[in-house]
Image (tube, rainbow, N blue to C red):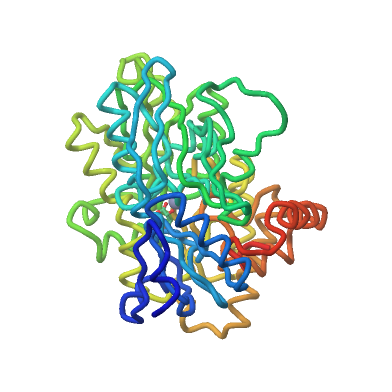
Length: 445
Ligand code: MLT
Ligand code: ZN
Protein backbone atom coordinates (compact mmCIF):
# COMPACT_ATOMS: atom_id res chain seq x y z
CA UNK A 1 0.00 0.00 0.00
CA UNK A 2 1.20 3.52 -0.78
CA UNK A 3 2.67 5.07 2.40
CA UNK A 4 0.71 8.33 1.87
CA UNK A 5 -2.56 6.47 2.36
CA UNK A 6 -1.59 5.93 5.99
CA UNK A 7 -1.45 9.64 6.73
CA UNK A 8 -3.74 10.51 9.66
CA UNK A 9 -6.40 13.27 9.38
CA UNK A 10 -6.09 13.61 5.61
CA UNK A 11 -7.58 12.78 2.25
CA UNK A 12 -4.96 11.52 -0.20
CA UNK A 13 -5.11 11.52 -4.00
CA UNK A 14 -2.73 9.26 -5.89
CA UNK A 15 -4.41 8.41 -9.15
CA UNK A 16 -2.73 10.28 -12.05
CA UNK A 17 -6.18 11.29 -13.30
CA UNK A 18 -6.97 12.88 -9.92
CA UNK A 19 -3.57 14.60 -9.82
CA UNK A 20 -3.84 16.17 -13.28
CA UNK A 21 -5.86 19.27 -12.25
CA UNK A 22 -3.10 20.15 -9.78
CA UNK A 23 -0.58 20.69 -12.58
CA UNK A 24 -2.24 23.99 -13.49
CA UNK A 25 -3.13 27.31 -11.98
CA UNK A 26 -4.16 30.51 -13.76
CA UNK A 27 -0.66 31.14 -15.13
CA UNK A 28 0.61 29.96 -18.50
CA UNK A 29 2.79 27.32 -16.81
CA UNK A 30 2.39 23.62 -16.01
CA UNK A 31 3.77 21.64 -13.10
CA UNK A 32 5.09 18.07 -13.04
CA UNK A 33 3.19 15.11 -11.62
CA UNK A 34 3.49 15.17 -7.79
CA UNK A 35 3.94 12.07 -5.64
CA UNK A 36 0.50 12.75 -4.17
CA UNK A 37 -2.00 15.45 -3.35
CA UNK A 38 -2.81 15.58 0.35
CA UNK A 39 -5.80 17.44 1.74
CA UNK A 40 -5.03 17.82 5.44
CA UNK A 41 -7.93 17.79 7.91
CA UNK A 42 -5.96 18.45 11.06
CA UNK A 43 -2.55 19.11 12.64
CA UNK A 44 -1.54 15.46 12.77
CA UNK A 45 -1.51 15.30 8.99
CA UNK A 46 0.75 18.36 8.81
CA UNK A 47 3.10 17.04 11.47
CA UNK A 48 3.42 13.77 9.65
CA UNK A 49 3.90 15.40 6.24
CA UNK A 50 6.69 17.63 7.50
CA UNK A 51 8.42 14.73 9.16
CA UNK A 52 8.25 12.58 6.01
CA UNK A 53 9.27 15.41 3.73
CA UNK A 54 12.41 15.82 5.84
CA UNK A 55 13.26 12.16 6.12
CA UNK A 56 12.35 11.16 2.56
CA UNK A 57 13.59 14.35 0.87
CA UNK A 58 10.52 15.57 -0.99
CA UNK A 59 9.10 19.07 -1.19
CA UNK A 60 5.72 20.31 0.04
CA UNK A 61 3.82 22.58 -2.34
CA UNK A 62 0.94 24.60 -0.86
CA UNK A 63 -2.29 25.08 -2.78
CA UNK A 64 -5.47 27.04 -2.15
CA UNK A 65 -8.03 27.24 -4.96
CA UNK A 66 -5.41 27.23 -7.73
CA UNK A 67 -6.28 30.72 -8.98
CA UNK A 68 -2.72 32.10 -8.68
CA UNK A 69 -1.16 33.82 -11.67
CA UNK A 70 2.51 33.03 -11.13
CA UNK A 71 2.71 29.24 -10.86
CA UNK A 72 3.45 29.42 -7.12
CA UNK A 73 1.28 26.37 -6.34
CA UNK A 74 2.52 24.15 -9.17
CA UNK A 75 4.42 20.99 -8.22
CA UNK A 76 8.03 20.82 -9.39
CA UNK A 77 10.62 18.11 -8.70
CA UNK A 78 9.74 15.38 -6.17
CA UNK A 79 6.91 16.90 -4.26
CA UNK A 80 3.59 16.48 -2.54
CA UNK A 81 0.87 19.08 -3.08
CA UNK A 82 -0.70 20.15 0.21
CA UNK A 83 -4.18 21.29 -0.76
CA UNK A 84 -5.75 23.35 2.04
CA UNK A 85 -9.27 23.35 0.60
CA UNK A 86 -10.53 20.99 3.34
CA UNK A 87 -8.63 22.52 6.25
CA UNK A 88 -11.18 22.86 9.06
CA UNK A 89 -12.37 26.02 10.76
CA UNK A 90 -15.05 28.65 10.66
CA UNK A 91 -15.25 32.30 9.81
CA UNK A 92 -15.82 34.25 13.01
CA UNK A 93 -16.45 37.98 13.08
CA UNK A 94 -15.61 39.95 16.22
CA UNK A 95 -17.34 43.35 15.94
CA UNK A 96 -15.79 44.56 19.18
CA UNK A 97 -12.27 43.87 18.01
CA UNK A 98 -13.13 44.97 14.47
CA UNK A 99 -11.66 41.79 13.09
CA UNK A 100 -12.48 38.38 11.70
CA UNK A 101 -10.73 35.05 11.94
CA UNK A 102 -10.90 32.41 9.23
CA UNK A 103 -9.16 29.24 8.07
CA UNK A 104 -7.03 29.21 4.91
CA UNK A 105 -9.73 27.10 3.25
CA UNK A 106 -12.39 29.83 3.55
CA UNK A 107 -13.41 31.15 0.14
CA UNK A 108 -12.55 34.86 -0.02
CA UNK A 109 -16.11 35.46 -1.22
CA UNK A 110 -17.42 34.05 2.08
CA UNK A 111 -14.92 36.01 4.15
CA UNK A 112 -16.08 39.26 2.53
CA UNK A 113 -19.75 38.26 2.89
CA UNK A 114 -19.36 37.37 6.58
CA UNK A 115 -17.85 40.80 7.26
CA UNK A 116 -20.56 42.50 5.23
CA UNK A 117 -23.37 40.67 7.02
CA UNK A 118 -22.30 42.49 10.18
CA UNK A 119 -21.77 45.89 8.56
CA UNK A 120 -18.03 45.56 7.97
CA UNK A 121 -15.74 45.60 4.97
CA UNK A 122 -12.75 43.41 4.16
CA UNK A 123 -11.31 45.27 1.14
CA UNK A 124 -8.87 42.92 -0.70
CA UNK A 125 -10.56 42.08 -4.01
CA UNK A 126 -8.29 40.24 -6.46
CA UNK A 127 -9.96 39.53 -9.77
CA UNK A 128 -10.45 35.93 -8.62
CA UNK A 129 -12.30 37.04 -5.44
CA UNK A 130 -15.32 34.89 -6.24
CA UNK A 131 -13.30 31.70 -6.64
CA UNK A 132 -10.05 32.05 -4.67
CA UNK A 133 -9.33 30.83 -1.15
CA UNK A 134 -8.25 33.09 1.69
CA UNK A 135 -5.04 31.07 2.17
CA UNK A 136 -3.88 31.77 -1.37
CA UNK A 137 -4.55 35.48 -0.99
CA UNK A 138 -2.44 35.52 2.18
CA UNK A 139 0.42 33.52 0.66
CA UNK A 140 0.54 35.80 -2.38
CA UNK A 141 -0.44 39.09 -0.71
CA UNK A 142 -3.23 39.52 -3.24
CA UNK A 143 -4.25 42.94 -4.51
CA UNK A 144 -7.12 44.04 -6.75
CA UNK A 145 -8.83 47.32 -7.71
CA UNK A 146 -9.50 48.39 -4.12
CA UNK A 147 -5.78 48.37 -3.32
CA UNK A 148 -5.74 51.83 -4.85
CA UNK A 149 -7.29 53.20 -1.65
CA UNK A 150 -7.15 50.34 0.83
CA UNK A 151 -3.80 48.69 0.17
CA UNK A 152 -2.94 45.03 -0.26
CA UNK A 153 -3.92 41.91 1.67
CA UNK A 154 -0.99 42.39 4.05
CA UNK A 155 -2.41 45.69 5.25
CA UNK A 156 -5.45 43.82 6.58
CA UNK A 157 -3.73 40.99 8.43
CA UNK A 158 -3.42 41.20 12.20
CA UNK A 159 -2.27 37.63 12.91
CA UNK A 160 -1.43 34.46 11.04
CA UNK A 161 -1.48 30.79 12.05
CA UNK A 162 1.31 29.06 10.19
CA UNK A 163 2.84 25.62 9.88
CA UNK A 164 6.58 25.87 10.44
CA UNK A 165 9.33 23.38 9.86
CA UNK A 166 8.98 21.88 13.35
CA UNK A 167 5.69 20.45 12.06
CA UNK A 168 3.57 22.61 14.41
CA UNK A 169 1.14 25.46 13.79
CA UNK A 170 2.21 28.73 15.45
CA UNK A 171 0.33 32.02 15.77
CA UNK A 172 2.06 35.33 15.09
CA UNK A 173 0.19 38.52 15.92
CA UNK A 174 -2.88 39.38 18.01
CA UNK A 175 -6.40 40.71 17.45
CA UNK A 176 -5.37 44.34 17.61
CA UNK A 177 -3.70 46.79 15.24
CA UNK A 178 -1.17 47.54 17.94
CA UNK A 179 1.35 44.75 18.46
CA UNK A 180 4.95 45.80 18.52
CA UNK A 181 6.77 43.18 20.56
CA UNK A 182 9.62 42.51 18.16
CA UNK A 183 9.79 42.24 14.38
CA UNK A 184 6.59 40.99 12.77
CA UNK A 185 6.99 37.36 11.71
CA UNK A 186 3.36 37.17 10.57
CA UNK A 187 4.02 39.87 7.98
CA UNK A 188 7.10 37.99 6.82
CA UNK A 189 4.84 35.04 5.96
CA UNK A 190 2.26 37.15 4.09
CA UNK A 191 3.31 37.24 0.43
CA UNK A 192 6.13 34.74 1.05
CA UNK A 193 4.47 32.29 -1.37
CA UNK A 194 4.90 29.41 1.07
CA UNK A 195 8.70 29.68 1.21
CA UNK A 196 9.00 29.94 4.97
CA UNK A 197 5.98 27.93 6.11
CA UNK A 198 2.30 27.46 5.21
CA UNK A 199 -0.46 29.76 6.44
CA UNK A 200 -3.43 27.77 7.74
CA UNK A 201 -5.53 30.63 9.09
CA UNK A 202 -5.52 34.33 9.92
CA UNK A 203 -7.09 37.15 11.86
CA UNK A 204 -8.04 39.99 9.56
CA UNK A 205 -8.70 43.64 10.21
CA UNK A 206 -12.07 45.07 9.19
CA UNK A 207 -13.41 48.57 8.60
CA UNK A 208 -16.99 49.88 8.51
CA UNK A 209 -18.76 48.99 5.28
CA UNK A 210 -18.95 51.87 2.78
CA UNK A 211 -22.58 52.52 1.90
CA UNK A 212 -22.30 55.18 -0.76
CA UNK A 213 -20.66 54.71 -4.15
CA UNK A 214 -19.98 57.00 -7.05
CA UNK A 215 -19.04 54.74 -9.97
CA UNK A 216 -18.01 56.51 -13.14
CA UNK A 217 -17.41 55.24 -16.62
CA UNK A 218 -14.94 57.62 -18.19
CA UNK A 219 -14.32 57.21 -21.93
CA UNK A 220 -11.57 59.63 -22.97
CA UNK A 221 -11.08 61.39 -26.25
CA UNK A 222 -7.30 61.02 -26.08
CA UNK A 223 -5.74 57.99 -24.41
CA UNK A 224 -2.68 59.93 -23.20
CA UNK A 225 -4.93 62.19 -21.13
CA UNK A 226 -5.65 59.28 -18.82
CA UNK A 227 -2.05 58.87 -17.85
CA UNK A 228 -1.73 61.96 -15.68
CA UNK A 229 -5.15 61.55 -14.13
CA UNK A 230 -4.32 59.29 -11.16
CA UNK A 231 -1.70 61.80 -9.98
CA UNK A 232 -3.88 64.82 -10.71
CA UNK A 233 -6.80 63.34 -8.76
CA UNK A 234 -4.64 62.63 -5.73
CA UNK A 235 -3.12 66.09 -5.95
CA UNK A 236 -6.63 67.56 -5.92
CA UNK A 237 -7.58 65.55 -2.81
CA UNK A 238 -9.60 62.79 -4.47
CA UNK A 239 -8.71 59.22 -3.58
CA UNK A 240 -10.69 56.73 -5.65
CA UNK A 241 -11.39 53.34 -4.11
CA UNK A 242 -10.72 51.97 -7.60
CA UNK A 243 -9.32 53.46 -10.79
CA UNK A 244 -9.16 50.90 -13.59
CA UNK A 245 -8.47 51.36 -17.29
CA UNK A 246 -8.39 49.77 -20.74
CA UNK A 247 -5.87 51.06 -23.29
CA UNK A 248 -7.12 51.65 -26.88
CA UNK A 249 -6.20 48.12 -28.02
CA UNK A 250 -7.97 46.33 -25.15
CA UNK A 251 -10.97 48.60 -25.52
CA UNK A 252 -11.12 47.85 -29.25
CA UNK A 253 -11.02 44.08 -28.55
CA UNK A 254 -13.78 44.38 -26.00
CA UNK A 255 -15.87 46.51 -28.32
CA UNK A 256 -15.44 44.15 -31.25
CA UNK A 257 -15.68 40.78 -29.53
CA UNK A 258 -16.72 41.33 -25.92
CA UNK A 259 -20.05 40.91 -24.18
CA UNK A 260 -23.08 43.03 -25.06
CA UNK A 261 -22.32 45.66 -22.37
CA UNK A 262 -18.85 46.18 -23.83
CA UNK A 263 -19.98 46.72 -27.42
CA UNK A 264 -21.42 50.13 -26.70
CA UNK A 265 -18.37 51.50 -24.89
CA UNK A 266 -17.27 54.81 -26.41
CA UNK A 267 -13.91 56.61 -26.34
CA UNK A 268 -10.37 55.99 -27.49
CA UNK A 269 -9.56 54.48 -24.10
CA UNK A 270 -11.65 53.98 -21.01
CA UNK A 271 -11.39 54.30 -17.26
CA UNK A 272 -13.63 53.11 -14.44
CA UNK A 273 -13.42 55.23 -11.34
CA UNK A 274 -15.11 54.52 -8.06
CA UNK A 275 -15.34 56.56 -4.87
CA UNK A 276 -16.81 55.18 -1.67
CA UNK A 277 -16.49 57.83 1.01
CA UNK A 278 -19.51 59.33 2.71
CA UNK A 279 -20.73 62.27 0.61
CA UNK A 280 -19.24 60.99 -2.65
CA UNK A 281 -22.61 61.16 -4.39
CA UNK A 282 -23.28 64.71 -3.19
CA UNK A 283 -23.39 67.56 -5.67
CA UNK A 284 -20.34 69.45 -4.38
CA UNK A 285 -18.22 66.28 -4.53
CA UNK A 286 -19.33 65.32 -8.02
CA UNK A 287 -19.13 68.89 -9.34
CA UNK A 288 -15.52 69.19 -8.24
CA UNK A 289 -14.77 65.84 -9.80
CA UNK A 290 -16.48 66.66 -13.07
CA UNK A 291 -14.47 69.89 -13.32
CA UNK A 292 -11.42 67.68 -13.45
CA UNK A 293 -12.76 64.88 -15.63
CA UNK A 294 -15.11 66.77 -17.95
CA UNK A 295 -12.48 68.20 -20.33
CA UNK A 296 -11.04 64.71 -21.00
CA UNK A 297 -14.31 62.85 -21.30
CA UNK A 298 -16.06 61.55 -24.35
CA UNK A 299 -19.47 60.97 -22.79
CA UNK A 300 -19.02 60.33 -19.07
CA UNK A 301 -21.56 58.12 -17.25
CA UNK A 302 -22.28 57.86 -13.54
CA UNK A 303 -23.95 54.66 -12.35
CA UNK A 304 -27.23 55.66 -10.83
CA UNK A 305 -28.07 52.37 -9.13
CA UNK A 306 -26.52 49.10 -7.96
CA UNK A 307 -27.45 47.32 -11.17
CA UNK A 308 -25.62 49.83 -13.34
CA UNK A 309 -22.65 49.73 -11.02
CA UNK A 310 -22.53 45.96 -11.32
CA UNK A 311 -22.78 46.18 -15.10
CA UNK A 312 -19.75 48.46 -15.26
CA UNK A 313 -17.75 46.16 -13.02
CA UNK A 314 -18.82 43.02 -14.88
CA UNK A 315 -16.99 44.20 -17.99
CA UNK A 316 -13.82 44.93 -16.03
CA UNK A 317 -13.96 41.65 -14.11
CA UNK A 318 -14.24 39.52 -17.24
CA UNK A 319 -11.41 41.21 -19.13
CA UNK A 320 -8.65 38.82 -18.12
CA UNK A 321 -10.71 35.69 -18.95
CA UNK A 322 -11.96 37.30 -22.15
CA UNK A 323 -8.44 38.04 -23.42
CA UNK A 324 -7.30 34.57 -22.39
CA UNK A 325 -10.10 32.96 -24.32
CA UNK A 326 -9.21 34.93 -27.44
CA UNK A 327 -5.44 34.54 -26.99
CA UNK A 328 -4.96 31.29 -25.04
CA UNK A 329 -1.16 31.55 -25.09
CA UNK A 330 -0.97 35.14 -23.95
CA UNK A 331 1.39 36.12 -21.15
CA UNK A 332 0.00 38.62 -18.67
CA UNK A 333 2.37 40.67 -16.53
CA UNK A 334 1.62 42.90 -13.58
CA UNK A 335 4.39 45.45 -13.32
CA UNK A 336 4.06 48.61 -11.26
CA UNK A 337 5.29 52.14 -11.76
CA UNK A 338 4.59 55.05 -9.45
CA UNK A 339 1.50 57.03 -10.52
CA UNK A 340 3.73 60.00 -11.36
CA UNK A 341 5.70 57.96 -13.94
CA UNK A 342 2.85 56.42 -15.93
CA UNK A 343 3.32 58.61 -18.97
CA UNK A 344 7.06 57.85 -19.10
CA UNK A 345 6.27 54.16 -18.82
CA UNK A 346 4.03 54.11 -21.87
CA UNK A 347 6.50 56.21 -23.86
CA UNK A 348 9.18 53.69 -22.91
CA UNK A 349 6.98 50.74 -23.86
CA UNK A 350 6.41 52.27 -27.31
CA UNK A 351 10.12 52.89 -27.71
CA UNK A 352 10.93 49.27 -26.87
CA UNK A 353 8.47 48.11 -29.51
CA UNK A 354 7.06 45.38 -27.29
CA UNK A 355 3.83 44.12 -28.88
CA UNK A 356 1.65 44.49 -25.80
CA UNK A 357 -1.80 45.66 -24.81
CA UNK A 358 -2.47 46.96 -21.34
CA UNK A 359 -5.29 47.28 -18.83
CA UNK A 360 -5.56 47.16 -15.09
CA UNK A 361 -5.15 49.22 -12.00
CA UNK A 362 -4.08 52.64 -13.26
CA UNK A 363 -4.91 54.28 -9.93
CA UNK A 364 -2.00 52.58 -8.19
CA UNK A 365 0.24 52.15 -11.22
CA UNK A 366 -0.23 48.35 -11.37
CA UNK A 367 -0.50 47.57 -15.07
CA UNK A 368 -1.46 44.27 -16.68
CA UNK A 369 0.79 44.33 -19.71
CA UNK A 370 -0.40 41.47 -21.93
CA UNK A 371 1.70 39.96 -24.68
CA UNK A 372 -1.10 38.46 -26.69
CA UNK A 373 1.11 36.79 -29.29
CA UNK A 374 3.48 35.26 -26.72
CA UNK A 375 2.66 31.80 -28.04
CA UNK A 376 4.08 32.63 -31.47
CA UNK A 377 7.23 34.38 -30.22
CA UNK A 378 10.57 32.53 -30.00
CA UNK A 379 11.17 31.71 -26.29
CA UNK A 380 14.37 33.78 -26.25
CA UNK A 381 12.63 36.71 -27.91
CA UNK A 382 9.77 36.53 -25.41
CA UNK A 383 12.21 36.37 -22.53
CA UNK A 384 14.04 39.41 -23.86
CA UNK A 385 10.80 41.35 -24.23
CA UNK A 386 9.80 40.53 -20.66
CA UNK A 387 13.22 41.48 -19.31
CA UNK A 388 13.02 44.79 -21.20
CA UNK A 389 9.58 45.37 -19.73
CA UNK A 390 10.74 44.64 -16.18
CA UNK A 391 13.85 46.80 -16.59
CA UNK A 392 11.71 49.66 -17.80
CA UNK A 393 9.44 49.39 -14.74
CA UNK A 394 12.46 49.22 -12.43
CA UNK A 395 14.14 52.19 -14.10
CA UNK A 396 11.08 54.27 -13.25
CA UNK A 397 11.13 53.32 -9.58
CA UNK A 398 8.64 50.47 -10.04
CA UNK A 399 8.72 46.72 -9.68
CA UNK A 400 8.16 43.58 -11.70
CA UNK A 401 5.11 42.38 -9.80
CA UNK A 402 2.42 44.40 -8.09
CA UNK A 403 0.06 41.64 -7.00
CA UNK A 404 0.59 38.27 -8.70
CA UNK A 405 3.92 37.49 -7.06
CA UNK A 406 7.04 35.75 -8.35
CA UNK A 407 6.28 32.02 -8.09
CA UNK A 408 7.76 30.17 -11.03
CA UNK A 409 6.73 32.61 -13.71
CA UNK A 410 8.98 35.49 -12.71
CA UNK A 411 11.63 33.60 -10.78
CA UNK A 412 14.38 33.93 -13.35
CA UNK A 413 13.76 37.64 -13.83
CA UNK A 414 13.52 38.20 -10.09
CA UNK A 415 16.85 36.47 -9.48
CA UNK A 416 18.47 38.51 -12.24
CA UNK A 417 17.03 41.88 -11.29
CA UNK A 418 16.57 41.95 -7.50
CA UNK A 419 19.06 43.76 -5.31
CA UNK A 420 21.69 41.15 -4.33
CA UNK A 421 21.35 42.26 -0.71
CA UNK A 422 17.64 41.40 -0.82
CA UNK A 423 18.40 37.96 -2.25
CA UNK A 424 21.10 37.32 0.36
CA UNK A 425 18.76 38.29 3.18
CA UNK A 426 15.89 36.18 1.81
CA UNK A 427 18.15 33.16 1.39
CA UNK A 428 19.45 33.55 4.94
CA UNK A 429 15.89 33.69 6.26
CA UNK A 430 14.93 30.66 4.17
CA UNK A 431 17.91 28.77 5.55
CA UNK A 432 16.99 29.71 9.12
CA UNK A 433 13.28 28.85 8.83
CA UNK A 434 13.46 25.91 6.44
CA UNK A 435 16.99 24.47 6.53
CA UNK A 436 15.98 21.34 4.62
CA UNK A 437 14.17 23.30 1.92
CA UNK A 438 10.91 21.39 2.22
CA UNK A 439 8.53 24.37 1.80
CA UNK A 440 7.71 25.15 -1.82
CA UNK A 441 11.21 24.44 -3.15
CA UNK A 442 12.21 25.99 -6.47
CA UNK A 443 9.84 28.95 -6.17
CA UNK A 444 10.83 32.61 -5.94
CA UNK A 445 14.45 32.07 -4.78
C1 MLT B 1 -6.92 41.43 -13.20
O1 MLT B 1 -6.83 42.45 -12.51
O2 MLT B 1 -7.77 41.32 -14.09
C2 MLT B 1 -5.97 40.33 -12.98
O3 MLT B 1 -5.19 40.55 -11.85
C3 MLT B 1 -5.08 40.29 -14.18
C4 MLT B 1 -4.87 39.05 -14.88
O4 MLT B 1 -5.74 38.20 -14.87
O5 MLT B 1 -3.81 38.92 -15.50
ZN1 ZN C 1 -5.12 42.72 -11.36
